[in-house]
Image (cartoon, rainbow, N blue to C red):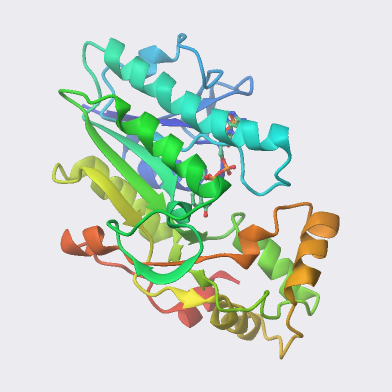
Length: 303
Ligand SMILES: NC(=O)c1ccc[n+]([C@@H]2O[C@H](COP(=O)([O-])OP(=O)(O)OC[C@H]3O[C@@H](n4cnc5c(N)ncnc54)[C@H](OP(=O)(O)O)[C@@H]3O)[C@@H](O)[C@H]2O)c1
Protein backbone atom coordinates (compact mmCIF):
# COMPACT_ATOMS: atom_id res chain seq x y z
CA UNK A 1 0.00 0.00 0.00
CA UNK A 2 1.26 3.49 -0.84
CA UNK A 3 2.06 5.69 2.12
CA UNK A 4 0.82 9.22 2.54
CA UNK A 5 2.78 12.05 4.16
CA UNK A 6 1.07 15.38 4.85
CA UNK A 7 3.13 18.58 4.72
CA UNK A 8 1.41 21.63 6.26
CA UNK A 9 3.23 24.71 4.87
CA UNK A 10 4.98 22.39 2.43
CA UNK A 11 4.82 24.98 -0.37
CA UNK A 12 7.96 26.83 0.80
CA UNK A 13 11.71 26.33 0.43
CA UNK A 14 12.11 23.34 2.76
CA UNK A 15 8.70 21.77 2.13
CA UNK A 16 9.05 21.77 -1.67
CA UNK A 17 12.43 20.08 -1.47
CA UNK A 18 11.15 17.45 0.95
CA UNK A 19 8.00 16.84 -1.11
CA UNK A 20 10.13 16.11 -4.19
CA UNK A 21 12.41 13.88 -2.12
CA UNK A 22 9.43 11.88 -0.83
CA UNK A 23 7.92 11.55 -4.31
CA UNK A 24 11.15 10.00 -5.57
CA UNK A 25 10.79 7.43 -2.80
CA UNK A 26 7.26 6.50 -3.76
CA UNK A 27 5.39 8.26 -0.99
CA UNK A 28 2.12 10.05 -1.71
CA UNK A 29 2.53 13.69 -0.73
CA UNK A 30 -0.19 16.11 0.34
CA UNK A 31 0.70 19.77 0.89
CA UNK A 32 -1.58 21.94 3.03
CA UNK A 33 -1.56 25.51 1.74
CA UNK A 34 -3.52 28.73 2.27
CA UNK A 35 -3.71 29.54 -1.43
CA UNK A 36 -6.47 28.12 -3.60
CA UNK A 37 -4.70 25.05 -4.89
CA UNK A 38 -4.63 23.49 -8.33
CA UNK A 39 -5.37 20.21 -6.50
CA UNK A 40 -2.39 18.43 -8.05
CA UNK A 41 0.96 19.64 -9.43
CA UNK A 42 4.02 17.48 -10.17
CA UNK A 43 2.23 14.49 -8.66
CA UNK A 44 1.79 16.34 -5.36
CA UNK A 45 -1.71 16.93 -4.03
CA UNK A 46 -2.48 20.42 -2.69
CA UNK A 47 -5.27 20.89 -0.19
CA UNK A 48 -6.43 24.21 1.22
CA UNK A 49 -6.37 25.05 4.92
CA UNK A 50 -6.27 28.30 6.90
CA UNK A 51 -3.48 26.98 9.17
CA UNK A 52 -5.59 27.66 12.27
CA UNK A 53 -8.98 25.92 12.16
CA UNK A 54 -10.01 22.35 11.52
CA UNK A 55 -11.57 21.69 8.14
CA UNK A 56 -11.80 19.16 5.31
CA UNK A 57 -8.00 18.91 5.38
CA UNK A 58 -8.21 16.74 8.52
CA UNK A 59 -9.27 13.89 6.19
CA UNK A 60 -5.75 13.94 4.73
CA UNK A 61 -4.18 13.39 8.17
CA UNK A 62 -6.51 10.44 8.83
CA UNK A 63 -4.67 7.26 7.82
CA UNK A 64 -1.47 9.08 6.82
CA UNK A 65 1.89 7.72 7.98
CA UNK A 66 3.40 11.07 8.91
CA UNK A 67 2.87 14.80 9.18
CA UNK A 68 5.79 17.20 8.77
CA UNK A 69 4.81 20.76 9.64
CA UNK A 70 6.75 23.53 7.86
CA UNK A 71 4.24 26.34 8.50
CA UNK A 72 5.46 29.75 9.59
CA UNK A 73 5.65 33.31 8.37
CA UNK A 74 9.20 33.92 7.18
CA UNK A 75 11.41 35.55 9.84
CA UNK A 76 13.16 37.38 7.01
CA UNK A 77 11.28 40.66 7.48
CA UNK A 78 11.40 43.82 9.57
CA UNK A 79 10.22 43.02 13.08
CA UNK A 80 7.26 45.40 13.28
CA UNK A 81 4.58 44.68 15.87
CA UNK A 82 2.29 43.07 13.31
CA UNK A 83 5.06 41.00 11.67
CA UNK A 84 6.13 39.75 15.09
CA UNK A 85 2.56 38.78 15.95
CA UNK A 86 2.25 36.88 12.68
CA UNK A 87 5.61 35.14 13.14
CA UNK A 88 4.33 33.80 16.47
CA UNK A 89 0.70 33.08 15.60
CA UNK A 90 1.43 31.32 12.27
CA UNK A 91 3.67 28.88 14.14
CA UNK A 92 1.78 28.33 17.39
CA UNK A 93 -1.69 28.16 15.84
CA UNK A 94 -0.66 25.78 13.05
CA UNK A 95 0.94 23.45 15.59
CA UNK A 96 -2.27 23.55 17.64
CA UNK A 97 -4.43 22.83 14.58
CA UNK A 98 -2.26 19.86 13.55
CA UNK A 99 -2.38 18.46 17.11
CA UNK A 100 -6.17 18.79 17.22
CA UNK A 101 -6.42 17.07 13.84
CA UNK A 102 -4.28 14.15 15.06
CA UNK A 103 -6.48 13.84 18.15
CA UNK A 104 -9.54 13.50 15.94
CA UNK A 105 -8.11 10.65 13.84
CA UNK A 106 -9.27 7.08 14.14
CA UNK A 107 -6.06 6.05 12.38
CA UNK A 108 -3.56 8.72 13.42
CA UNK A 109 -0.14 9.11 11.76
CA UNK A 110 2.78 7.23 13.35
CA UNK A 111 4.82 10.40 13.63
CA UNK A 112 4.50 14.17 13.58
CA UNK A 113 7.69 16.06 12.80
CA UNK A 114 7.90 19.78 13.48
CA UNK A 115 10.31 22.12 11.70
CA UNK A 116 11.66 24.33 14.50
CA UNK A 117 14.80 26.44 14.84
CA UNK A 118 18.23 26.56 16.48
CA UNK A 119 17.42 30.20 17.26
CA UNK A 120 16.23 28.89 20.63
CA UNK A 121 19.87 28.95 21.81
CA UNK A 122 20.10 32.72 21.19
CA UNK A 123 23.32 34.46 20.19
CA UNK A 124 26.23 32.40 21.47
CA UNK A 125 29.60 31.01 20.50
CA UNK A 126 29.42 28.32 23.20
CA UNK A 127 28.96 24.86 21.69
CA UNK A 128 25.23 24.02 21.90
CA UNK A 129 23.90 20.48 21.93
CA UNK A 130 20.24 19.79 22.67
CA UNK A 131 20.81 20.28 26.42
CA UNK A 132 22.30 23.78 26.08
CA UNK A 133 20.50 26.65 27.83
CA UNK A 134 18.09 28.82 25.87
CA UNK A 135 19.11 32.35 24.94
CA UNK A 136 17.19 35.59 25.32
CA UNK A 137 15.14 37.81 23.05
CA UNK A 138 12.22 37.67 20.65
CA UNK A 139 13.46 34.84 18.39
CA UNK A 140 14.17 32.67 21.43
CA UNK A 141 10.67 33.30 22.79
CA UNK A 142 9.12 32.39 19.46
CA UNK A 143 10.92 29.04 19.53
CA UNK A 144 9.93 28.43 23.14
CA UNK A 145 6.24 29.11 22.48
CA UNK A 146 6.45 26.96 19.34
CA UNK A 147 8.00 23.99 21.16
CA UNK A 148 5.72 24.39 24.19
CA UNK A 149 2.65 24.16 21.96
CA UNK A 150 4.11 21.17 20.11
CA UNK A 151 4.73 19.17 23.27
CA UNK A 152 1.59 20.36 25.08
CA UNK A 153 -0.24 17.38 23.63
CA UNK A 154 1.11 13.86 23.75
CA UNK A 155 -0.32 11.06 21.67
CA UNK A 156 -0.65 7.33 22.28
CA UNK A 157 0.05 6.31 18.71
CA UNK A 158 2.01 9.24 17.26
CA UNK A 159 5.69 9.90 17.95
CA UNK A 160 6.66 13.59 18.23
CA UNK A 161 9.91 14.82 16.72
CA UNK A 162 11.04 18.45 16.91
CA UNK A 163 13.90 19.41 14.58
CA UNK A 164 15.69 22.60 15.59
CA UNK A 165 16.89 23.45 12.11
CA UNK A 166 20.08 25.35 11.27
CA UNK A 167 21.05 27.51 8.28
CA UNK A 168 19.91 25.40 5.34
CA UNK A 169 21.99 25.58 2.16
CA UNK A 170 20.22 24.62 -1.04
CA UNK A 171 19.48 25.71 -4.56
CA UNK A 172 16.57 28.01 -5.44
CA UNK A 173 15.90 29.80 -2.21
CA UNK A 174 16.63 29.91 1.46
CA UNK A 175 19.11 32.07 3.29
CA UNK A 176 21.94 31.52 0.81
CA UNK A 177 20.23 33.55 -1.95
CA UNK A 178 20.62 37.04 -0.40
CA UNK A 179 24.23 36.28 0.58
CA UNK A 180 25.02 35.18 -2.98
CA UNK A 181 23.48 38.40 -4.28
CA UNK A 182 25.64 40.50 -1.95
CA UNK A 183 28.78 38.60 -2.92
CA UNK A 184 27.97 39.02 -6.62
CA UNK A 185 28.06 42.81 -6.18
CA UNK A 186 31.33 42.75 -4.26
CA UNK A 187 29.58 43.07 -0.88
CA UNK A 188 30.31 39.58 0.40
CA UNK A 189 32.60 40.72 3.19
CA UNK A 190 32.52 39.71 6.84
CA UNK A 191 29.26 40.79 8.49
CA UNK A 192 29.58 42.74 11.77
CA UNK A 193 32.27 41.25 14.01
CA UNK A 194 32.33 38.10 11.87
CA UNK A 195 32.64 36.08 15.08
CA UNK A 196 28.98 35.00 15.11
CA UNK A 197 28.57 31.34 14.20
CA UNK A 198 26.65 29.88 11.29
CA UNK A 199 25.42 26.36 12.01
CA UNK A 200 24.85 25.19 8.46
CA UNK A 201 23.62 22.04 6.75
CA UNK A 202 22.86 20.95 3.20
CA UNK A 203 19.21 20.53 2.26
CA UNK A 204 19.84 16.94 1.11
CA UNK A 205 21.04 16.05 4.59
CA UNK A 206 17.96 17.73 6.06
CA UNK A 207 15.69 15.70 3.76
CA UNK A 208 17.47 12.53 4.85
CA UNK A 209 16.92 13.53 8.51
CA UNK A 210 13.19 14.09 7.96
CA UNK A 211 12.87 10.71 6.26
CA UNK A 212 14.82 9.02 9.03
CA UNK A 213 12.48 10.59 11.61
CA UNK A 214 9.54 9.14 9.69
CA UNK A 215 10.93 5.66 9.15
CA UNK A 216 13.06 5.07 12.26
CA UNK A 217 10.86 4.47 15.29
CA UNK A 218 13.65 5.38 17.68
CA UNK A 219 13.35 9.04 16.72
CA UNK A 220 11.47 10.93 19.42
CA UNK A 221 11.83 14.36 21.05
CA UNK A 222 14.16 17.25 20.22
CA UNK A 223 17.08 17.13 17.76
CA UNK A 224 19.52 19.77 16.53
CA UNK A 225 18.97 19.43 12.78
CA UNK A 226 22.27 20.92 11.68
CA UNK A 227 25.63 19.79 10.33
CA UNK A 228 28.61 18.80 12.46
CA UNK A 229 30.90 21.64 11.27
CA UNK A 230 29.57 25.10 12.17
CA UNK A 231 31.81 28.01 11.14
CA UNK A 232 32.08 31.70 11.98
CA UNK A 233 30.49 34.26 9.69
CA UNK A 234 34.00 35.41 8.69
CA UNK A 235 34.90 31.92 7.48
CA UNK A 236 31.52 31.41 5.82
CA UNK A 237 31.72 34.66 3.84
CA UNK A 238 35.31 33.92 2.78
CA UNK A 239 34.33 30.44 1.53
CA UNK A 240 31.30 31.87 -0.26
CA UNK A 241 33.38 34.54 -2.03
CA UNK A 242 35.97 31.97 -3.06
CA UNK A 243 33.35 29.55 -4.36
CA UNK A 244 31.95 32.40 -6.48
CA UNK A 245 35.38 33.38 -7.76
CA UNK A 246 35.28 36.70 -5.90
CA UNK A 247 38.30 38.22 -4.18
CA UNK A 248 38.50 40.11 -0.92
CA UNK A 249 35.48 42.27 -0.10
CA UNK A 250 35.30 45.02 2.51
CA UNK A 251 33.81 43.97 5.85
CA UNK A 252 30.39 45.40 6.70
CA UNK A 253 30.65 47.03 10.14
CA UNK A 254 27.67 46.60 12.47
CA UNK A 255 26.10 50.10 11.98
CA UNK A 256 26.34 49.64 8.20
CA UNK A 257 24.59 46.25 8.51
CA UNK A 258 21.78 47.83 10.56
CA UNK A 259 21.24 50.54 7.94
CA UNK A 260 21.56 48.16 4.99
CA UNK A 261 19.20 45.63 6.56
CA UNK A 262 16.47 48.18 7.27
CA UNK A 263 16.83 50.39 4.21
CA UNK A 264 17.93 48.05 1.43
CA UNK A 265 17.28 44.42 2.40
CA UNK A 266 14.11 45.32 4.35
CA UNK A 267 14.90 42.72 7.00
CA UNK A 268 15.85 42.29 10.63
CA UNK A 269 19.61 43.02 11.09
CA UNK A 270 20.01 40.57 13.98
CA UNK A 271 19.45 37.71 11.51
CA UNK A 272 22.93 38.40 10.10
CA UNK A 273 24.61 39.84 13.20
CA UNK A 274 23.87 37.02 15.62
CA UNK A 275 24.49 33.29 15.43
CA UNK A 276 25.02 30.08 17.34
CA UNK A 277 27.51 27.27 17.41
CA UNK A 278 25.37 24.12 17.40
CA UNK A 279 26.18 20.46 17.02
CA UNK A 280 23.86 17.57 16.07
CA UNK A 281 24.63 15.46 19.13
CA UNK A 282 21.47 13.34 19.19
CA UNK A 283 21.56 12.68 15.43
CA UNK A 284 25.16 11.54 15.70
CA UNK A 285 24.24 9.32 18.64
CA UNK A 286 21.59 7.76 16.40
CA UNK A 287 24.33 7.04 13.84
CA UNK A 288 23.10 9.58 11.27
CA UNK A 289 25.73 9.92 8.53
CA UNK A 290 26.16 13.41 7.04
CA UNK A 291 26.96 13.66 3.36
CA UNK A 292 27.96 17.32 3.55
CA UNK A 293 30.48 18.34 6.19
CA UNK A 294 32.96 20.37 4.10
CA UNK A 295 31.70 23.91 3.58
CA UNK A 296 34.08 24.71 0.70
CA UNK A 297 32.95 21.65 -1.26
CA UNK A 298 29.28 22.20 -0.41
CA UNK A 299 29.30 25.84 -1.53
CA UNK A 300 31.22 25.12 -4.70
CA UNK A 301 28.53 22.57 -5.63
CA UNK A 302 25.70 24.99 -4.85
CA UNK A 303 26.83 28.32 -6.34
N1 LIG B 1 14.99 27.65 5.64
C1 LIG B 1 15.75 27.58 6.73
O1 LIG B 1 17.02 27.67 6.63
C2 LIG B 1 15.14 27.37 8.09
C3 LIG B 1 15.98 27.33 9.20
C4 LIG B 1 15.44 27.13 10.47
C5 LIG B 1 14.08 26.99 10.61
N2 LIG B 1 13.26 27.04 9.53
C6 LIG B 1 11.81 26.92 9.75
O2 LIG B 1 11.27 25.88 8.94
C7 LIG B 1 9.97 26.25 8.48
C8 LIG B 1 9.94 26.15 6.95
O3 LIG B 1 10.98 26.99 6.42
P1 LIG B 1 10.96 27.44 4.88
O4 LIG B 1 12.32 28.02 4.62
O5 LIG B 1 10.45 26.36 4.01
O6 LIG B 1 9.90 28.64 4.95
P2 LIG B 1 9.03 29.27 3.76
O7 LIG B 1 9.68 29.05 2.45
O8 LIG B 1 8.76 30.68 4.18
O9 LIG B 1 7.68 28.41 3.80
C9 LIG B 1 6.82 28.42 4.91
C10 LIG B 1 5.39 28.14 4.48
O10 LIG B 1 4.54 28.54 5.56
C11 LIG B 1 3.31 29.09 5.06
N3 LIG B 1 3.11 30.41 5.68
C12 LIG B 1 3.81 31.55 5.50
N4 LIG B 1 3.30 32.55 6.23
C13 LIG B 1 2.23 32.03 6.87
C14 LIG B 1 1.26 32.58 7.75
N5 LIG B 1 1.29 33.86 8.11
N6 LIG B 1 0.29 31.77 8.23
C15 LIG B 1 0.23 30.47 7.86
N7 LIG B 1 1.11 29.90 7.01
C16 LIG B 1 2.11 30.67 6.53
C17 LIG B 1 3.47 29.29 3.54
O11 LIG B 1 2.60 28.36 2.90
P3 LIG B 1 1.27 28.83 2.06
O12 LIG B 1 1.51 30.25 1.64
O13 LIG B 1 1.23 27.88 0.92
O14 LIG B 1 0.15 28.65 3.01
C18 LIG B 1 4.94 28.96 3.27
O15 LIG B 1 5.13 28.26 2.08
C19 LIG B 1 9.70 27.67 8.99
O16 LIG B 1 8.90 27.62 10.15
C20 LIG B 1 11.08 28.20 9.32
O17 LIG B 1 11.07 29.15 10.37
C21 LIG B 1 13.75 27.24 8.27
